[in-house]
Length: 206
Image (cartoon, rainbow, N blue to C red; front, side, top):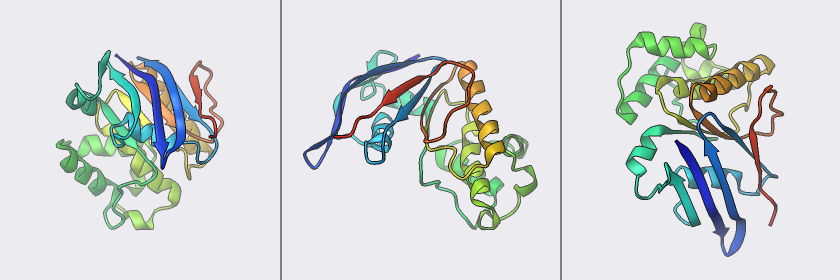
């Protein structure tokens, strides 16, 4: 399993946002996309996820263009972006049940509670999201990663609003996912603290 970018380029209103990106992410790999604000990090992630079709170049999954295998690709992919898709009037448990219904999955409450406990939300699982802190709301988003067994995590600023303990916990989850045969693509301004090798893709200003 691998993701390959071959000559990937995107323009915005005739201006190059990024050009000729070529990189391969293998099983067990973590790739951090870095660059200044406006360099195209979020656009790159959305393009890789099939949410932006206005690009040049090739995105390959298992050596086939994602355009030819998108059904399989999309079942292996989960994207957590800036906008949470978290309903404030629902509890964390209800949000995950709602997410399951939207994505075609049904999970027992025991599984949902285990996922919320893994992200530190066991005691807040039945509270409306609007009563939670910003960091707890971020944890509701990140709990989605544990609900389904999707190999490819694409994360846009996943450490936003997390305290130091939360950052360390989530770094461990990412590391464990990669070591278990997953793949992770992320953007973050946070200085990653892993004692392991990971790739960095730097986007230049245009």
